[in-house]
Image (tube, rainbow, N blue to C red; front, top):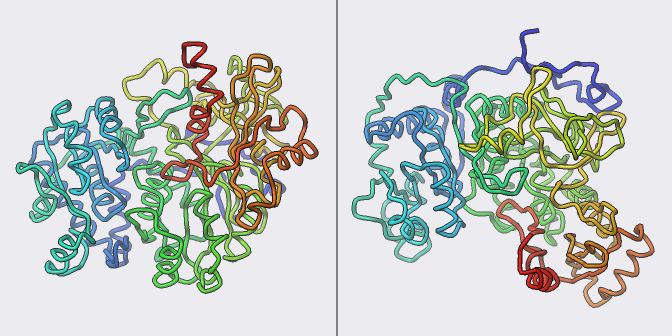
Length: 584
């Protein structure tokens, strides 16, 4: 067998009783190609089909390819060479996608920067990744890049306006900026304008780029909580896009892929952008997460019937499911399947969403170090709820003991989830020690230790219990925050819940739950009454010692609840570590 990612097809998750979809191959010979070669294939197949929609404008594969090659030519003329790092400080836009693939065309390495970062967060990313040039939205330059430029001199600053490639008259663009309806901002006099780089005759030099060359440096806290850059190769990115294409077996050329998640995040990079390029879909891009009304209105206006797909976080689907005027929109005619990632998909949200949209929604699992997609539920009538689903074609997983990582555990026992497959990253950039701790080799495969705790069922499906570093220790018992959230969330008055451990001298840690109550339950239940309900319905050591009602929960840009922020802002946490005169 020449396929290095071949998985024994007798594995339990491949069996029909596990829910493996018959439309999806168990193994696959992943193409040895670069990201630009993947784009070029689709341009050849679908030249005049749309590849993106943004702010009322469609762009075809042919148009995108012309822009990609023009920009690659311009970047080459600036002296950027293979291996140089380009930071994209851009929201979702035509420019983000074009820039990503232009860099791939030249062998440059992309690092996407969160546009909501504070200056020193961006500086930290620049220092780690070794950025040489930046492509930045003019509206973001002054408040973000301008504040760190003296500490981190850049070779090139390339600026673009949000509507530069949108079909709109120059007068409308001018007026929109004048009326401040189109964001803009001051930029340096010597900044290079993006549109000037596009206004050249494409003439890209022949550069040998290999599938194993780095394509992207993505920032991650990793499995140990320390910020670092995951190195993803062209092969990683193409293989993971291919896996998504295989898994979403009903997706096809001409389908729509809704892009609310930010493209600098691995989930959107692969699930929205690269998968769409691979399949011949078109991306519906939003520069910032739209309000639910705007999102529904746009999908219903331009998305194809029953051929629209949506990768998102649970909070996005929850807002649609609970939107009071949902009946005014023909969303049920549009959505076919949705993938919820960046955190768990709770059964009540899944059920409410499927009821109002008539679409399938499944939970997907992954992490930045795996490009990121590892597994998902099947897109069939066979429903798997509460698990991470089934590993993608060519992906294998095991559960290893937490203490040493050398002993494989049987079904039902909690341990660390480890995975092998074509999507596993190359390394952590300039960090051999963390790389050695996270990736280990045996049986001819490279195994990624995910830092997630979970167990296998008899069908080889993984249930994720929690992050290794977030386990709560209550009098020696291991309590998983995710399980507490699921249990408290069963109360019919609870909309959202986050759980974490707080230090306690007697018990080691105590469980606290931060709860958002549904509007129609406000004033009808107290924190004390909810805790009493928990005592009646949850094992004693998992019952939250403290419950705090909140208007909302803090979330990242992709909708992941920020447990750590809640924990570290809590008075008990602050007082304990003030007394200890140290931080954990």
